[in-house]
Image (cartoon, rainbow, N blue to C red; front, top):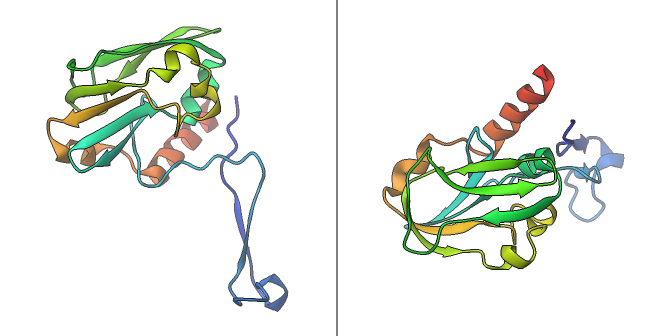
Length: 163
């Protein structure tokens, strides 16, 4: 399976510049995937967005493409403790049941209840409305060992190239 990444063409020269600002125009190809730069990513294809001492966790666009149509999501209840690198839930698709690994440790404060009635949201908006859980972080610095968006995109590009 191939994932299309954001492709940016910066056009130089007077014809390639915006008439208003004089800045280079940037063309983004339709269907391109861009991973949010303020998220951190795991090699198991989970993401976390940290804000202060809290984190929102989900699966990446790459993961949802690999899974196919999501039909069920199992997540921990509020108050549950999760540990970095350990399984905290599952995602069931028409292809398989896949485990979800915690990118960091903490205590669950909320699970995305909307996913119980609309698990397909993981396919349509994995980096937004398809978030899985919110946690209070045990160690706010723990996410520093995760990949940033550029490193994650390089990781999945290498993975696809070797497949």
